[in-house]
Every structure is written in C-alpha cells, then in structure tokens.
Image (cartoon, rainbow, N blue to C red; front, side, top):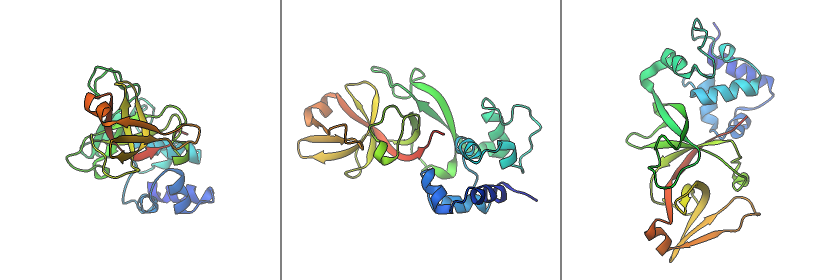
Length: 223
C-alpha cells in the first residue's frame, strides 16, 4: 500500500535530490525529510502544499492514505477540513501577519492576513508564535525572500548576538534583521550588502521607538 512517505521518497528521487539537498531547499533538517519518508511525521499543511507544487503533483496524490471524499478537502480554502481528517487535536492555528500597524496589539485582527496550521510537536510548549510575511530583499543572503513566511517565537529579548529577529522600528512595520548588542544600543544588520547596518541607542529602546517582537525559528519558502 502506498503511503505519504513512500510517494514523498519517490518524488524526491525523481528530482534527483538527496535528503540533505531537499532539506536545504526548504530550510529543513535532513532528519525531517527522513521522518517524512518513514511516515513518522506529516508536514504541516502549508509545507505539504509547497512540496506538492515543487514535485508537480496534487495533494491527493502525495497523501494517498487520507480519504478525499470531500470535494473541498485539498482546495486552498479547505485547509481546516483537511486538518480535521489528519488529527485535529494535534494541530495549532497560528496567525500570519502582514503589515503590523502602529498603535494596535501585534496579534490584532487588523494585522492578520492568513493562518498556518502547525503540528504541536514542532512547537515549544508554553511559547507563543506567529508568522510574518516577508517583504523586500534585505535578508536574501540568509535565503529569506519576498513572499516567504517565517515562523517567529514571540519574545522581547535577544538570546544571542546574530540571531535573526523580528523588530519593530518607529512603531511601524516589523522588519527582519540580525541583531547585535552594543554597550549603548542595538545594531540591526541586513543580509544584503545594499543595506547598511542600523544603530539604535538605548534611549530608542526605552521609549519604544525600537522593539524586539520575536525570534525567527523557521522559514517557509514561497514557490
């Protein structure tokens, strides 16, 4: 009997890719590809769509062990129905933010443009997450491109220098940058030589002019 893992592996081999090469293309670990191919883990719905598009097959073909009697099951608007047929209790609904407007809470409905569904095993218990839709080309050398979605663990502090963080500047849209501490402030560094580093003194942090929103923990490419 064909399973998702078996067909996934077949499609990878048809592309002539190793597990590591495919993992790198989708910003994943090789171990994740291995788990998929051994039917030990199912990718989240957004990633399933990306794989199906990349392989040039339908979701129905890629996931043969799920019933497809519902006409909307694999429709772009049928995500919730699909997830309920997998394991509804194991999926977490995470908001996708576009423009983060000044003066409103970050997860306000005004900021939310979509939702992603993520298996609970991919999330740290007790942590809050959101996705940010990437705009611009300031992080292209980190393989983060316009239209990609990045999963962000919500936090207002920097764990270590060089982490890629979502930062709000001037109370306006969030920007993705590598962040470095300095004695008297923070440096925001792009991954594109066309954009110079930006320095913000401690006073800007204290007044809320600059604020860390969270840490990037996963990148999902836009195909």
